[in-house]
Length: 150
Length: 118
Image (cartoon, rainbow over all chains, first blue to last red):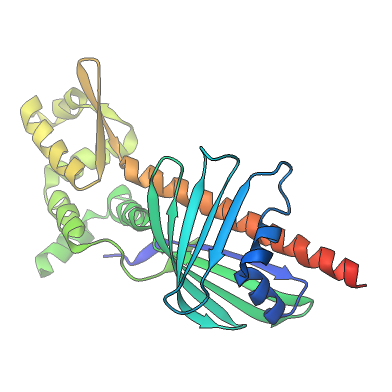
């Protein structure tokens, strides 16, 4: 079968050192500042961080108490100032949840730090890819061949 | 963005998918639904199959998450995919916006700090 999946990758060059970016990204008080710095109207942002392997970071945010998103990240790898790996469980206001892996790297670059977020593990999308690759293009022979080998 | 990563679909789900795709009639139904959604009757006609027969095949495809059905009035309409796929796409869009917000915030935070420092 295919092992392709849709993952999320996003990068940004930030005007600071990797240490400064890592600390701003992981410090609860600093997070509250930069997370809401762009908000036009005050909403709810609550962040708690227990920065140790196995520890949790919980962030709750939203425009009001009835429309809150929650994200709990469990720290897996803490390699200051280079890399941070977490398992994330996101919850939307309607109660739906999604568990993913988040791998963030902080690389020194000209002009500052290249911060790259790689988020993976959107499970049903892989199924969609599988479907798109094998069923939609009509390549059923490959599936038959696979089944014959079983 | 397409990346290589480890499989996250559990074995039971894959078993259902492969079992569903192993049957040529069900593959024909998928190909037909790839063109457009269809009712059970519209699927049954070209297959020269009874409604009960095609309903059984569609049920197997639905269990595998390959097809979604919806009762509209007196007919059952079938289409490719399932609601979980739409949910997953919704999460990706949500996280894309969340990360853009976080990185925009960090960028402005450091830009302002740098401005104050200078």
